[in-house]
Length: 244
Image (cartoon, rainbow, N blue to C red):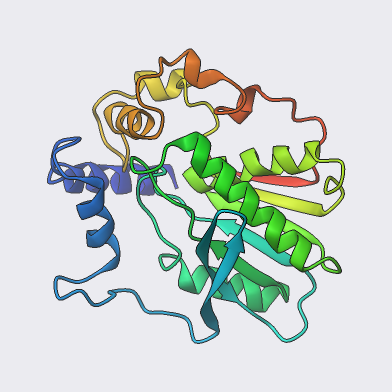
């Protein structure tokens, strides 16, 4: 497997050479490129069992994508990845559909606002408000939380808030955190990775952080409210971490 992975890494590096320099393409253009064709049509194949719903929060309405089964055993609140500046509720249709069908659960993917239009503290506030609303609307079903990359960061951040909320602390029965970003001040591996790109680079990560938390130093970004690696994790429910 090592030789196979090294060859795969080489191909990824070759493909990455064609990526425009960091910051040369706006987040808005990157978002549209990922989801839509040039004619404006969505390029992704959408699930037959998914539907969009409007979730009413105290100060706004947001969209959620719901993957349903007739008699769900639980509700999974999902947060997509994309460095807090990209990603959408449409990018993991087959993955979330399969999770819903095979686990017998309802999956609700949250269309949280993105940076730089919305900064990370407000993103997390809205993501948490969505979690509370869904939990309150389904009082008889266990709550699960999960996401990938920046979505795993959002998942852990809102999960910690739920664990600290005495009225809701027992609602979450489990979480999965897939290749999450948990130290926005940069772990040693993030800092030394350099400009080689295996999908990400040190420069790209710093770009994401500056858009989500403009003007903050790496030390300031290590506050537990931004970097859950430094929070008290002792009260978490069963949590499955998936890493590369």
